[in-house]
Length: 293
Ligand SMILES: Nc1ncnc2c1ncn2[C@@H]1O[C@H](COP(=O)(O)OP(=O)(O)OP(=O)(O)O)[C@@H](O)[C@H]1O
Image (cartoon, rainbow, N blue to C red; front, side):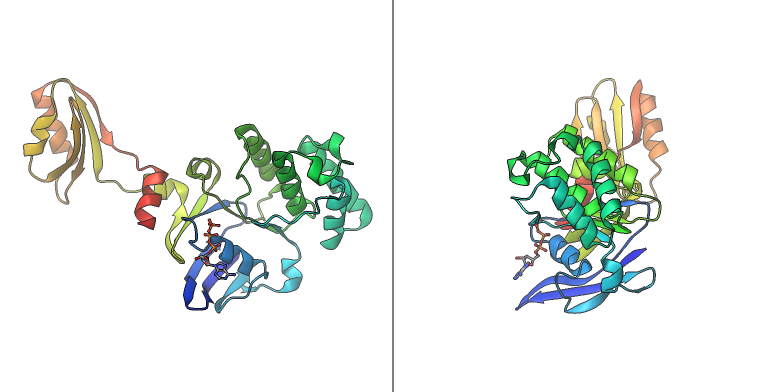
């Protein structure tokens, strides 16, 4: 497991990270979200050793992460960092070699990944002649070529069209074994909700929410939705609930502690047909908005 433990980072007077702690569990995709400037890139750079921490430690399997172990990580930096004038196959083989693969293995892995990303025919093209989307595919290939033991990806899907996102996600799922923890940052909440198992929400340098997406997004709710024939305005006079919204026969309301939602349902039935009644699922965007307020 990859653990970020009490990371703090100052830039002059500015506290960019304030005691940031979270786990990235192997075999699970962890989404890292937060508004611009929240500290995601800073955290990722510290994990990769590109930047030092003012305090705190990064742990790998219970021990402080060493440069040797980090060499086996895969990283897709925000500023990217491939060579524009180098042929993509040569480039990927080079990265594989940098991470310790021998020439044959680096070439084998490169060819497999390029094929998988639909870039087999472009292998001898120079990077800068590729479309931006394809350059981004090569960038993810560079992070994967050496069969990394952990993956840290800074905005890997930004600027990609939905088909390219799907291709990249398929590749990630294929390449990422149950031993590999994956941390990726993203601004696209819909994507995060679709892809991630776990989520870490950062706001102004602090972790404000963390856990399984399924728990965070649909967690315990006190909000209910009722749809009846006729007008649901009578709910406004019911004690123990707070009406959020009524539009004709559709109402959204919060139930206060100690008030049974079944009692509200009974009252609704006594007034006429009930078409829908149930807890309102909290969307991830609401969790995010609430957490970063
Ligand atoms: N080298 C630096 N020198 C000074 N301040 C910095 C430096 N790097 C980052 N910061 C500041 O630290 C804070 C966190 O920045 P960071 O880039 O980590 O945020 P982020 O969550 O990745 O944002 P974005 O989503 O916009 O990339 C910001 O206020 C930023 O201005």
